[in-house]
Length: 155
Image (cartoon, rainbow, N blue to C red; front, top):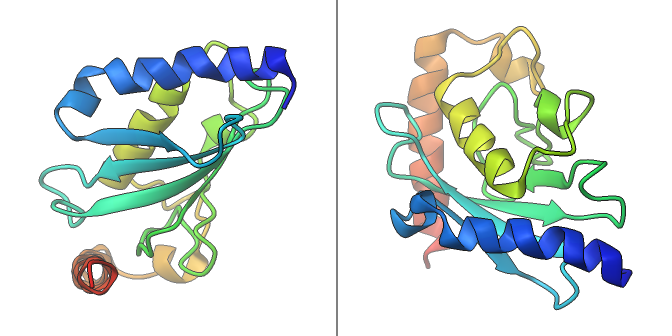
């Protein structure tokens, strides 16, 4: 990655590390490689949701055009959510696509993903199977699937 692109992501990376949410263990970001092209994010499941108590790993790929183009983000942790592909982890969220502003930081992206877990957008699904299910079934399925995935991942 060119030096200017590294400089563009370094500051947002530091903002996440210094954020209140990071100190409260709600969001986290780590370098995967030394040139800031790939990051590993983590968000905590929001309280009072089926995702509460879960820790969700994210793959974040940053292009040389950041912040003018959004980072590519996907869930690594399997999750049952209408806006997340249960197969690939791809995310359907407008700020990761066409509703992105260059001023939107990495910190904002992580918090937006956490908010998405609390307020799904079933009218704009990434996973139609999940979106078509009854909300109660989705809640029960996500809680048990996430707990099982977290238990398996910790082994």
